[in-house]
Image 1 (cartoon, rainbow, N blue to C red):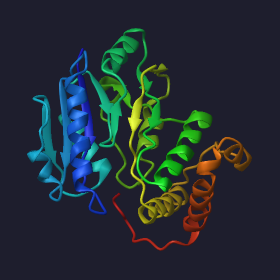
Image 2 (cartoon, rainbow, N blue to C red):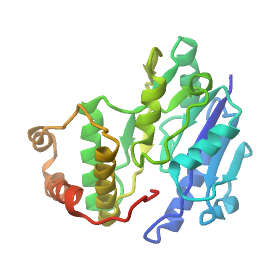
Image 3 (tube, rainbow, N blue to C red):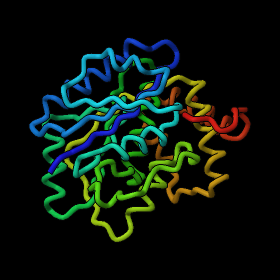
Image 4 (spheres, helix red, strand yellow):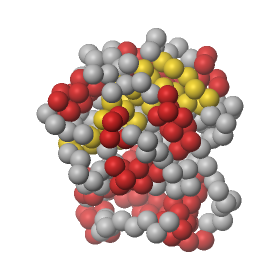
Length: 263
């Protein structure tokens, strides 16, 4: 029973090259130290991120190149080339919390699970606004119970692929296609998510996501109550959280963005 790990790679914005390079190498080191090694770690770059070839990566790494910077396209290319019995979709800012996570995933599937949700915890590193954002994201993870599984039996993915037009909803769209009648589980181990935060790009993603939800009629049954956010936010993060919330609410409807944005 083998695992293919799929990680899209892009060129980091705002000049944070060194941090991004180091993070990918750290992920590789972690995967190489897992008690169960993956069969392959497929990293998919584009012409602007071929620098990944220069990084110090484990022996099971396989670098593929996409014609354009679209996360769904990159994942689809990796799925077309994957050889493992299981697929783990791992972003380039996520790292397993312990050295037995891959082993746990396989043990869970032997118990009859077809797909697994791997919880996320956020790194709470960096600037004040980044920490405030991580707190807000943590609240959604805690209360929504809407995380998307990242570990799948390859056989149930089959010929299903990510929709390149559903920007920021590609995970959900694929999951909804293949989840019917499947047995879903959850790991005890988790991923540490060092999601970066830069105000302009974050608001841009919010606006694109809002446009996409209207265009493709994508809804969510979950809304985190404002009262809950206030109640469960430490005093030191409250100004930052409120600033982010109000900025995102405004950007959702009025921020201009170019059409057909890839990321």
